[in-house]
Length: 96
Image (cartoon, rainbow, N blue to C red; front, top):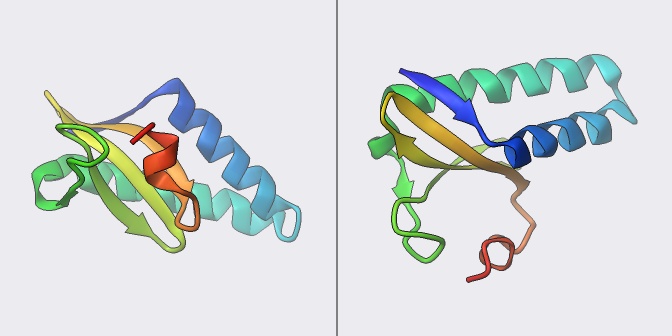
């Protein structure tokens, strides 16, 4: 199984890394690596995570530290839609 990332999820990861790098560039690199590894773990069993039908019919979420990994189960794993800080208005981001 494999994690696939939307272009927006890739932008989210870059922004998270840039923000963390303001204080600690080394941690920024390791944190983004951890999130990517966590996404690979999600891809191994995407249906085991919390469903969020309020965001979309197939959308699920998982936390990683203060961040939410928003994804959909995919044919061969998971499609990561967004990586958002937990303080964000997630339904607002998805137009719900």
